[in-house]
Image (cartoon, helix red, strand yellow):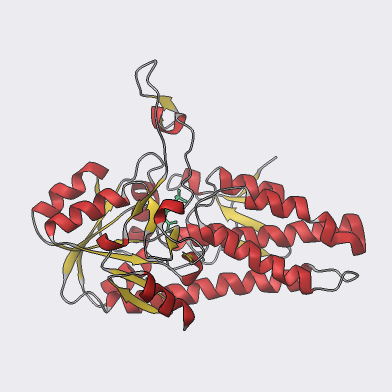
Length: 354
Ligand code: MRU
């Protein structure tokens, strides 16, 4: 059973918290109404939390899964002693199967799995795995700060920007990818106004991005998703700034459904598209966006709103939650290792080789 608590003094900006041997997630399903944390005691509970959107956003899912491995290994060692490596496998599989698109999940699990192979069988693995999960968490925040600087440097004059979904502190270890760039650019007074798509059906823009930006006293105007093209046609928008769940070897970008439409409209209006994502989001094993597994969630998410059915009885729905923006529509991919302008396979290989 889920245990909800009000965490005393959560670090500002921290949706993912390990404290005194316990793991907590800010329950993003109920923001901004409630700022409650869920206490998660097992890897199974962590996998369910990822699947059910308690935590979401590619880097945040990866970090959460890494802490899930710590819980899994601790329990496996308590149950099976020196046979813990075998006993932990079903939990690793469960975490792997929680959501399919964000490659950060698999990247973090592979990193934890590698450490598991190196640890001695007889000793309690909890501490070593916790250090590694903490390191993944810390590195992500650091990467976001660096992307913030690099992305802000691409904005040459004060302008309006549009963002989609939530690619902020809530979606990462802290600070954010797209919202990290927006935060850094705001400090330099380069942003005249942030427009956030509301992002049906989970309303990450209306609930999460607006909540985060207003916490930082950054004014934000919400748009219904279909209004972005119209706004661009009126001028005053210099950049679309988004995050990503997986970037293929040729620079194609999977992100929240609607990003592709935004990029097509941006091209038509001469608005530039910036994708801010750490290198843990880049999947060089996938040649193009066509090979990225796209999660399709339950139709009920679309047919209802706020728990109440809104669609006509008998209507069905198609609910893919990500789409692929071809590299040709992307002006810049900003990573912690550097910026790739007009991405293609050669440039992506060079970035990842450095
Ligand atoms: O379904 P979600 O809320 O997990 O989707 C999140 C997104 O699409 C984000 O834009 C992406 O993960 C980048 S987060 C830094």
